[in-house]
Length: 314
Figure 1 (cartoon, rainbow, N blue to C red):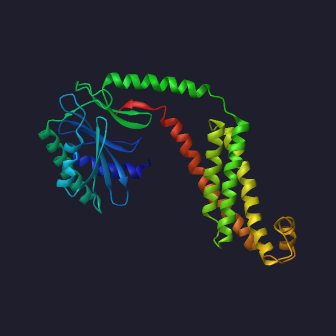
Figure 2 (cartoon, rainbow, N blue to C red):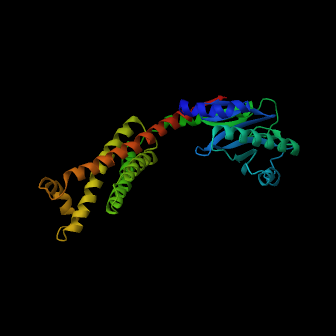
């Protein structure tokens, strides 16, 4: 997350006596005897999901008990139980100040409710109530764990990381995957173009499908893979855009088929039958939006790869 987003989260966390982990973008800490972490689920209305890990006399949380509070509070809008984890979705406000007030009141209400029912802070994996329960990040995701379970998770991650490193990148299969993905992108260029839209969104479709296609069949995405995907996208954006215009030409001149129109398209532009500035302008837009789709997707893949190797105590 960027510094601006982290500062916004700090405005929510500080009044509650909680902290912010800037790496994974969560608010975390101890609140009224419970370890909690909050994840923002709606940036427009500042709504949050607060995560607890609970047991009652060593038993898993009872759905009918922990969900009762949703019916009693207008600001607690949902409750999901996943093993020992209990996740409440909290309604936010339109401003930071109003959201802080709502969060504080909701957390007080929930913690008092859970204490009254006899629920205790516990490890999300083994359900222990030992004092070493704490907040951790495991593969980039927050978790409430005991020390033993965290160590076991680290060992599992180390094994998986070693196995992933040993996986060889299938460049040929990845290239096929990228090509197949690019066909979907080219189809989007043609379909949207024929519907009369400037095919901007199709560039994003092209980028995402090509990259995901390479990852799916190639097993991993290396720098070499990124170069291959980029070359394929450059080619297929050009082909898709040219096919779109060729179909339009074939529809206008009934004695011309699509393949002949595709072949003579440069001649039609050069001789003024087609507006060159419009053709190349549309092509530039699709290239631009392919880049807009590709760069975040590639950065996300790199970031996810780094995050899966990050595990630490918050």
